[in-house]
Length: 315
Image (cartoon, rainbow, N blue to C red; front, side, top):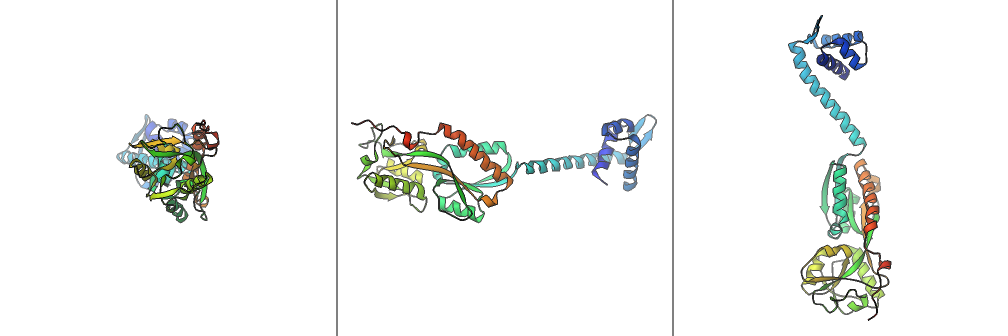
């Protein structure tokens, strides 16, 4: 028995007329009758009663019709599923992110957009440090990750920078610099700095150190905290000052003030996506393409780049 036998039978069962069913199927009436007879011989039962007024279903024919409809619906679903799979509309993705990256509005926005575009892609989220996520991608435990670049160079892992944003000073409310519209890095000389460990993520840590040293001083490391959000918490507690990515200003913690930097070269943070180019599945390939497209659109609304930040007017 083939699917065409079921399709032919259902056409006759619905039309209750061989000629009309043949016209609907686009075949001749004699070949249709032969196919139905072949089906009945294979089943060993009579499905249809032929008469001058048309066709009637036997009890066996009625039971067979119900099951044939289910089979054909299943076949249609199988075809559609295969087509969607070919278009990468089904599958699963494990998407990693660092705490700092997840605070950037682009990350949740692009994940939500991809879920809407590919609703049948099962997405699992994984929060880890940059170094841990790079290893997870290398080992196949994650498909891609939103991280802060640069990241450790690892064979089989590609890192693409998506967006740039300037670092801003985060100061305790009431700090001597908190009331200014902007400050220079030199203004922070001698202040105790709050960092999170370089082993957690070297990109912003190194950017802060390099920027301060370029301004003529080495920042005094007062406290190391486990993640970027903790930096803001300890600044609010009056334990020191720090530099954080521009989008961290979304953390409206009580007791802190964010102040832009007015240096000629403001240090930047870089949001990136990391993935294994050799492990691209259809779903992952489409997801990355959508991320690139969304990043290009998002860049039109980014904060000013470091070279575009106007200098502070002389006092």
